[in-house]
Image (cartoon, rainbow, N blue to C red; front, side, top):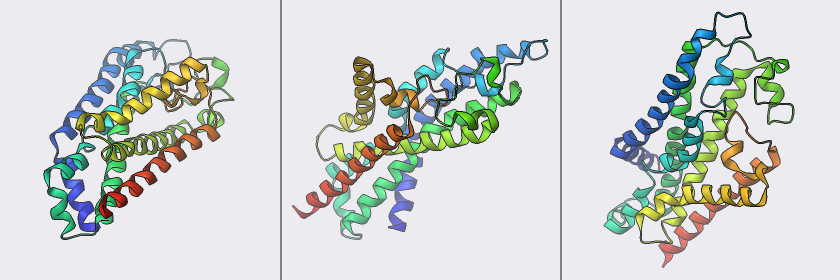
Length: 267
């Protein structure tokens, strides 16, 4: 499996769509810095409480268009670079060559690991770029709850941590986004066994994401909306039990992928 992982990682990072997805995400991140963060430097030396990186980076505010656009497109961008390869392997005959040299479940396991890691990485890199660029422009003053300038409150996930150690808060949130978007992309692996159309495979994580968004908006159960609780600015208040439950569902779907893959191999 180690050799398979090396091959699949090379396929992912050498794929032209990897560069396209990263460039698209980074362009959104950089445009946010140019049009939203950079103009705020004029207020740094005024006599008012300073606008800080923690409230103005792309993951920290809810008012500009770029965060809304990015967290809407993140499942699509993270799925584009690699998710189609399983469908391509099954329909090109490449998978038969692999099975003559390696165990089938080793191959499917490598696909799962690489899909998870690559998709999670593509999802968080633009956020990290935006955070670093914003930190070069705005001060990193520790947030003060009494100012009312921050969207995080005592009911927010890790709300206390945000006001005591904001860097750790952001770091943990980036890990959460990495895990969630990585697991969400693995839904497409299951879809690869259920459809003949590669575009359906690539779009399936995005469609699950949008379906969840639509259902939560129509029912008024906003705390279940992954689009909202994955944003570090937390435009809605959710609960850890809900986040863990949705992650568990994605893990179960990943388990379904292995069951279907094993069944397909035995046929």
